[in-house]
Every structure is written in C-alpha cells, then in structure tokens.
Length: 451
Image (cartoon, rainbow, N blue to C red; front, side, top):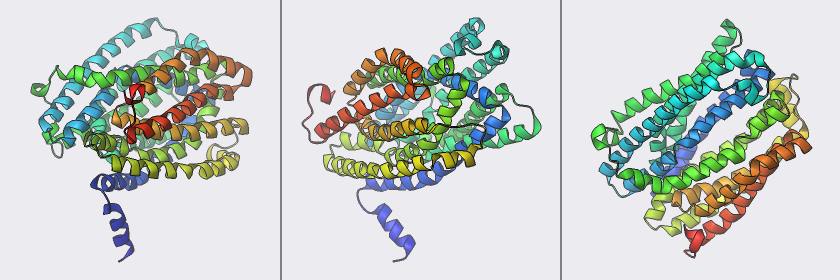
C-alpha cells in the first residue's frame, strides 16, 4: 500500500462521523494555514498603510462595533443545533424551514440595529469614547457607519456558513471566510501602493469584500448542492422561532456576558494605556493564537458531530472522541512554550523594530491562549450536546465583576492586567467543563449538570 493509500485508509477507517471529521480537519489545516498567513501579512501591511497609533484605533473601534454581533439573540447558535438535529433525522423540509426562518429573523433584527446605529452615531463622539485626539472625530464617524453597515449584512449572510458548520463542513465554511480575507489582503496591498493611509478605505475593504464573497458563494451553493434547503419565503415558519430561541436564548445570554468579559479589553487598554498598548496586545495575541486556531481546526467538526451523536445516543463514540481530543491538547503545551522562547525573535522578523512587545505580555498571552484552548474543547462539545446552563451561570457571574476588575488590574499591572480576568474565566470554565462532560458521557449528569 502506497503513502496515498495509507493516508486514505487512516481517513476512512472508523465511524463515518469520525471519517467526516478527519476529512474536514485535513482540509481545514490547509485552509487555516493560508488564513494564518493572511492575518500575519495583514498586520505589518496595515500598520504601514496607516501607523501604529491609527492601527490601535482601528482595532479598538472595530472591536467595539463588533459588539453588534452579540445581539442576534443567540439565533445563529440555536439554528446551528436545530438544523443539525433535523438533518440527523433526515427531516429536510424542517431543515429548510429553519434556514428560511433564520434568514428572515436575522435580516429583520440587523436592519433595525443598523437604523438605530445611524441615529446613535449622529450624536456620539468617538474621540471621547476612545479617549483619543479630536483630530480623528470626523473620520471615525464615517468609519463606524461603514463598519456597522457591512457587519449587519455579513451577520445575515453568515447563515450560510453556519449551515455548513451544522452540516459538518467546517473546512468549507472556513474556506469561504479565508477567500474574503485573501481578497481584502490583495486590495489593501494595492491601496498601499496607490493611496495614502485611510481608516475609511481600510474599513471598506476589510468588512465589505468578505460580504461580497459570502453572498456570491451562498447563491451558487443554494442553486446546486444545498438546493433542497435553499431559503424561500414560503418556507418561513414563525412557530419555529420559539424552538430555535429555546436553546438560542441561553447562547444569547452567554454572548452578552462574553461581551462584558472579553470585548471591553481593547477599549479599556485604549482609555488607560493608549492605542499603542492595543497594538502591542493584538500583535502578541495574533502570534500565540496560531496555536488556538490550529487546535480549533481539530475541535471544530465535533460540535455538530456531538449534536448528531447525542441525538442518536452514541455515547461510546463520544467518549472515545473526547479522550483523543484531550490527549491532542497536551501537545499544545510544548508548542506554545517554544513559541514563547522565540517570541522576540519572531516579532523582529514579522513587524520590525518599530514596535516593542514586552516579554511579560507575551508570557501572559501565551498562558491565556493555553487555557482558552482547553476551555474551548469543553465548551464546543457541551455546546453540541446543548447542556449549557452551567456555562451560562459562570459567564453571568463573571460579567458583573469583569470590567471594574480589568480596569483595576490594568491600572496596577499595565497592559498585562487586562488579561487577569479572562484567564480566570476560562480556567474556571475548563475545570467545570471537565466535570460536566465526564458526567454527561457517563450518563450520571443531573440537575444543573444536565441542563
């Protein structure tokens, strides 16, 4: 048996669900490799197109605008699980109803959000919000509207990529995203050669082009492979909203709590340490998050696979899969340790000497990514099963204390202080997730562990 034959045997060997996951993991590695390369190239390219201060402003403003994504009321996550369940049972008519209803509901939600954003933006001073010079005020107002406009469109169009995830096609879903990023990279490179630095142009390219890509690809697939579940107004069923939101509402609560725990980090850094601190933190995060993205590739196919397996009560497969994924995570420890040792050397090659990243910041970010990766394993599998009440309670608790504590630690410890609470949250999630998944897979879960 040749090398290709051996590889093919390893992929197809085992349960059909596992084989499908292996195919997606292999395809995703190639795709994610390209995505990582694009993101790494985007950082110095974008910094050179504007400057380190404007780049920090861009990261902060875009992260603030991204909060809008949390106001889908958990519909996308609820849709993903419900679509996967309908598919697992072969009820394709119901699956099509979920698709059609989700498009209409999310379209309505984000149209209203965009209208509200236009009104709010006319009264808001972004320079005061970000605590920066008034010289950016005019441009930031326009940039904010562009970001909101394309983000709202993208969140509706992303029903298609969520459908791919629910159908256990994470590699294809990621490819759609990567294609949009690649197109944006090419256009930004052209802009650096032909125009002066502009936050408005940056916002238009990075948020607008991915929308065009998702729209075009979804049209093609809805007319071919996914014709049987293509959205249609006659398949909209408002009675399904409650069904989707039953689980989706818990995801919504989690999303809002995540907003308070994690998405204020850039804003807090900008206001206390300045935009340059945001640039330093995000460079370190992008570097170490390579490990998180790689491990995420491996875990990604198993969210919807666990939905299917749990629906079919295949506990033997779930136990075996969880054990393998846990062992794979152990490999991230030596990998991230090597990345930490080489971090300063890599930064110099990657972004040059214009920006200096303190080793202490790299250390904290590496610890954060390591714990985040482990917590991500538990949350993905438990989310697939749909037993997320415990996870919700943990996020709600930390959401009440996160912002004041992040402000406190950032003032006391500098940039690394903003990471103390996120590290604590994911460490707690990892411990509780470990206990819950063991109870669920041994069928001993009861009370809050089984809700």
